[in-house]
Image 1 (cartoon, rainbow, N blue to C red):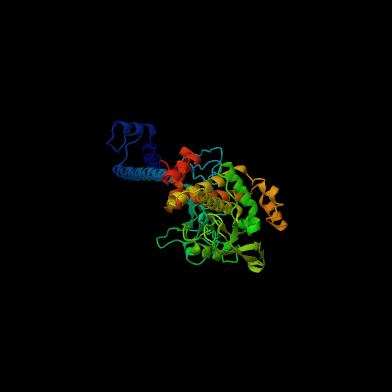
Image 2 (image 1 turned 135 degrees about the vertical axis):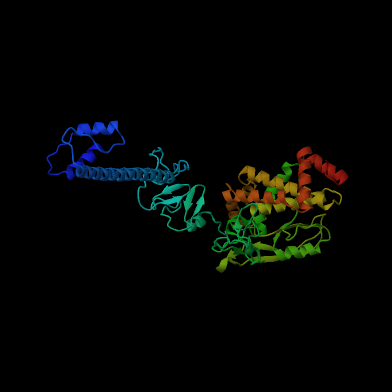
Length: 490
């Protein structure tokens, strides 16, 4: 302050011959803090000069006071600015971007650390700096680095979808995760509650819109799968539809079925249950239903009977020649002829629905042959659940044996020269033998699943009770118990 006062004095006394001692004045200010009129070693000043000096000192003090106040205000403002800057930096500070695993396109394999307050892009892991950025999924991104997991294009929409910690365009997410109908190939619609509702086959897991259960969409009469819109099923002469995979091993005529019949006769002999030759006929649906109406006894699996063991004399229309397929996959040139059944024993014939795959035809035939064996061996009239149950057990055993063998037995090849069927059928039989395709094995598992999961009290509960008895006591002891008591052993 002494220098400032001296500056004012210099300005005030510019041109004067008087000299002031700086050192003396500073010391004075130090001794008398309340005195503003310094004592100097020169001449004594006049009263007017003293007033001028007092005015100069006052002005100097006023200017010094204003400068001090300005310095305090500036210091306070600087402190406020620093606090505000620290708050902004802390608000902009974000955690490290989340880690999604080895397949994450947004997280580098080696973490990079940045000073506090930096914005680090979770996509490229570099500083964002100034400019536009996105704050999504608990991280910040360059707009070009926030990309769809499916198409790898930047997400610029206001809304997006996520799966796990990965972002998707809403359209890409729907394409990747929204289920499509296996029948119409469209996205399965949501129900009134906004939930995706669909139907699925319990074995094939074929997903389809609920509406297809009521819009007459055809099903394969063998595997029960619905016909897709882009695939044409074969239409059989009696109106049934058959998928192309099931058609590949389908048996279409009586002569064509004879090798399979011999296979199953050998299977029965391996169980010490030899069965005499009973006429076997493959027939259409109408002929089978008419024969069922003419039969006094028996229980039939609804909604459609696919096999029948007859005990009555009647005339049945049987299929002689395998049909050909023309326009629209419709069969043509199928030849049938009437067959007169005569009663020579307790069983007059076994009828099987034509056009079914070999494994399904065989399981139905094994079932009906068990009916014939029970009658020919003099078993009493059994309750429906016991008779149908033990027949289902044998059919299930035959399927098990066929699937375990991996291919059909060699009986067909040795019997192909038999006069009971034509040479044209022997060539088609050769196609049905050999190593099974993956689909045919899957089909066999499906037929087993049908037997095991049947909910009917006669066929389903009867099978489960019979299988439990056979697993516990064996087939022979179970049959002996049935003969004596008419029930399954427990």
